[in-house]
Amino acid sequence: MTTDKKSLREALESLLTDQLLSVQERLGEVTIVISASDMLPVLTMLRDAEDMRFSQMTDLCGMDYSAYADGAWEGRRFAAVYQLLSIVHNRRLRVRIFAEEDDFPVLASVTPIWPGANWFEREAFDLFGIIFTGHPDLRRILTDYGFVGNPFRKDFPLSGHVEMRYDPEQQRVVYQPVTVEPREVTPRIIREQTYASN
Image (cartoon, rainbow, N blue to C red; front, side):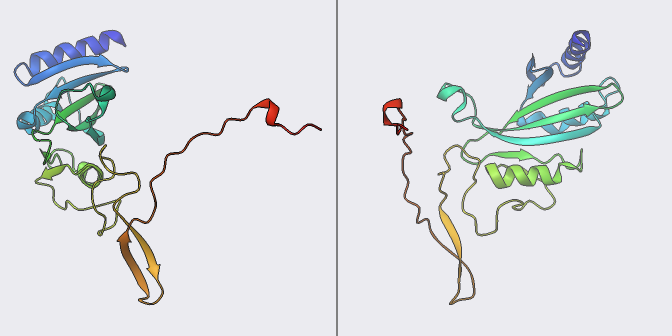
């Protein structure tokens, strides 16, 4: 298994000499980081090159690194992480691509390479606010259309911005400002002397 990861790493380094920002072996998988400007040609090579053949993208998730490593992170804030599978070579690869801007994260859509990325990209758009240019139908997938913000961002308030309720007078669902008061929960300490004696 280790030799297979070593051979994959060597093949990646020889195939993507100028495009690789980093390669590391962690958590049982090889992870590469590439730039957003190189992502479509590199991902196409990973799918089509004979010694790669990563024909399946099994997962795509958005990431917000703003509070990563207890705030010690000094890189870009938003990234998309792609999990790739090569059935021919029985290999897995993790690809991390950071968006160029933190205020308005934009990446290219990989649906032309792996059509199954459609809903994954919609989820990352909905929950993290990452825009995927070239996506055929980029709209919310998990939150409703009146939802404000992106709930998986680290700076999103736990109570949200608005709440919805059914209004019997209007006979429809209405949105209103959040009525939940933020509070700090302090755990109760139970001591033996406070137990009732029988």
